Image (cartoon, rainbow over all chains, first blue to last red; front, side):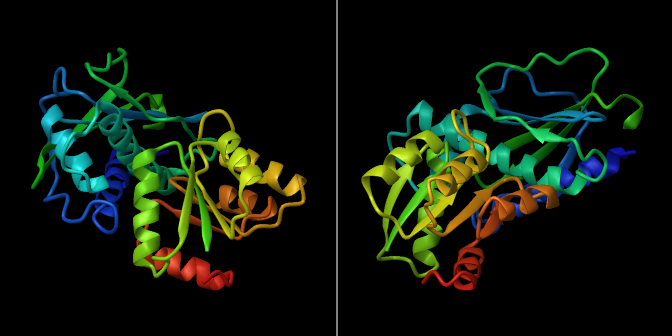
Length: 155
Length: 121
């Protein structure tokens, strides 16, 4: 059985893991955000689905913040295209999801990662799911890391 | 040295190439591909000294790409650079002919250590 804190810790490890090579000095102390999923913010999502767990992980923010994050990541400041931004942010959430998956794989060895996708609008949250939001204050702006889980009694 | 970098994310390909340069491969020539199908095409056009590939990609994923490569008798050193990295996937990678698996995120030291271990310098 996976506890909520185990998943939360896995996500936070995923965030902190970016601070080395990919995104230096990214994150200050994350805060758990109890106000629900921020409305209508763009961002990238990746699914982790197994026999016992089903999780959607998203990284959402104001578009200008996603632009800055992309610039920081790929080292290009000017004339960023939407394709470059959506690609970079999808990869960030993919990496965070991968780290989290490695930490919880024993809970559900059948867990598989999907391909990340970028959404310009809000993800529709199915009823009967549980969501958590971490607010991350960074030098680039505020980011929200969202997890939506449908693990039934396994959570 | 010529290195083929395969990842469906252009951003990640840029980061991999940047960190390889920081790891000492600053004079390497890089060839890029966005999935296994394109990578096989690149390999039909050029001889490379090393292949670094993502695992999860559309069209042809990294494992399928590696297996196709080995089935053709191609023995170029091959490493996965992937957000995956569960024990089962590491085992699958090795059984299929990969020399190493580097989990994202990574640092230049990860590349230096992995490539030193397989004699790629």
